[in-house]
Length: 113
Length: 113
Image 1 (spheres, rainbow over the protein chains, first blue to last red):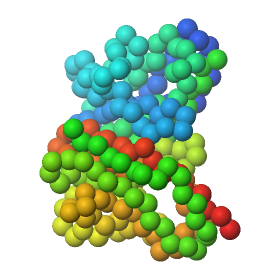
Image 2: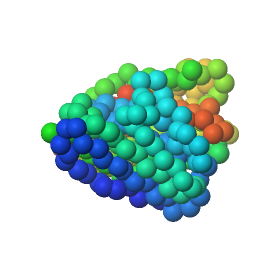
Image 3: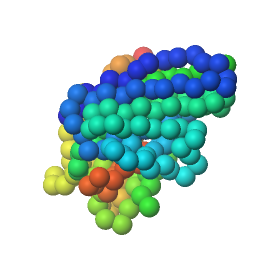
């Protein structure tokens, strides 16, 4: 298993600003992912955070809006840039090893006002 | 591409009654299958998983699920629901390896006295 710490747990931000969310895993993992969960919705994959290289983004998500870093095998950040109220969501970090389930942090509940 | 369907958006059951949540998947081969639970304001917790072998899998909190290849289904069951089971339940699928996990739209469970 893997224990994932995500912070902040929640934040209220002004539109036009940026927020960086941190995700720390208690052991090395091969794969880390970032998901968005809009109110009342399921999880949508934003991107795969690749260690030492650029993240791989899903359709509809771009690097300028959601820059991601992954400097090592236990840590990743997601930045939500130039925020608007439509970015109000829960953002979830997950980690996987080969052929295992996805482990999740508690999420970051973001409200943009 | 893989996909997951949870046909029931919302289910209400009485405490002590049995529960079955439906999940159908679309994938060419047998994927890895999961059920997660999300309580309000929380991250996702893994209830159970199916990789191979016995098609009836036991999970935490008294849940079980049965993989039926002929029906492409992985339904979640519990013989007697407790009020604390009220939450949202997500079925998920991955081809395995280092592939991403795809989530269904979720089923919100309400438990009434």
